[in-house]
Length: 476
Image (cartoon, rainbow, N blue to C red; front, top):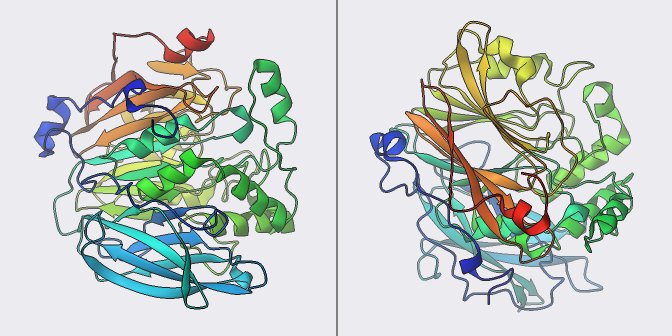
């Protein structure tokens, strides 16, 4: 049996509807980049602490259609100030066709983190990679195989895009079963993590969970220093399901507030030494490129062919008192260039509806933070100007309220969403996870879809009720 339970216990993702996606040219619902699973026969070897946080791939800030970003953290053996990391990038998952290789030093001044960009690759395809730790000329340890991918060329028509979107993964609130589930899916192009990847400020969350019957305890103290924040990331990455997901698919990530502290809202708080320590730790452990000046934002625009673009918002960083967006993020959201826009925001975007007025009503928004799974049409008072999907929380409990009038809203339903987006429309599958045990089941419990100019249609599998409600007696 594989780690986390058998595949038979997990319901597979359903395929996109013919109406929404065959019109876009996608074949049988298969995504564009993901062309197969990883070579799981090539497993990690050597001391467990050599690559304790695993590996990951991201999207470079520039040239993403011909380059990939690779990440790892390699801890040297005791007494060594650094270690050599040897890396391999291949055109196949079995490592037979090496297209690039090299060596780089993991040094103490960079917390032994290695980030490297591999360029001059083919657009719009998957690559596979692995790394080795070399000490005094001998291979000490090796990683699992990971998958990276270049973006489609901006000169080509945009293919359909399959995103996995998630947020809010409190370690003490449950096991990362939805991460394990998504790692096993072979046809996800990008994993988008919208923040609260750690809960660095939570010390007593374990108490409430023990009362509810959970046995998972987060031993890390509330973070105040750089070392504290690093300790939190290392604790969270001790979960094999999160490490497996980071290896399985390329990631696009942003922070919310709990990477800093509960309620972080930018402004003058950005200059707080504690906040800058948190920002540095986030930059170290995530597969992203960051500016030398950590007070700068991490927002970006990612093109997906000639017709789609992803707009990643660093909303918390640029928030102002009373406004979780701020002028800089509003301007970025409003800078429409004719392509269909996919907004990725750590917070709900209701406060930014003014910048959507007069823009392309095909805009689709994915947001996190609320711990509520939901779908909502965004109106300007006269007509629909966008649609927003909230991913809910991977594990975290205690949801906001006030979504009773939404076409779909599910409170305190741990999981994530998987979205198929094309020029013509989107289909969003909301996943529900049993987080009370490492091998908890994951299932599709609701499906929402629309044509790009049409209303939301809410439906879903009818062969089962709420999985978590059945197994734990909770409301859906």
